[in-house]
Image (tube, rainbow, N blue to C red; front, side, top):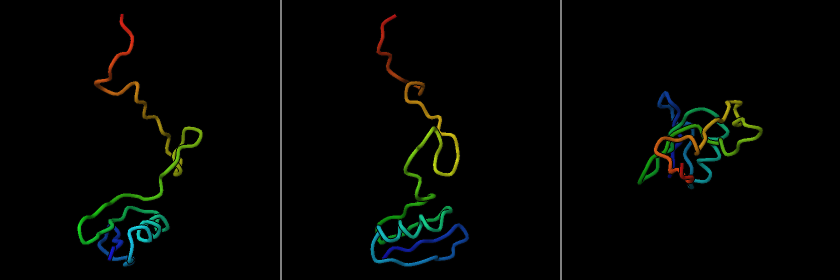
Length: 77
């Protein structure tokens, strides 16, 4: 059994599979926690693509692997 719980602690639904719980969380479209027997996962579900530099909610996606701290330089200077 997987419970979808909103940030106020209200149980928004109980589901037999993790897949259906995640689909319900996507429809809720806010920060939720999914609790199962062995684990829990939280977040806003449904952000799965970046188009034209924007996340589905309109936030600019500007993460760049090349500029991360501790990167390995591929060129010798």
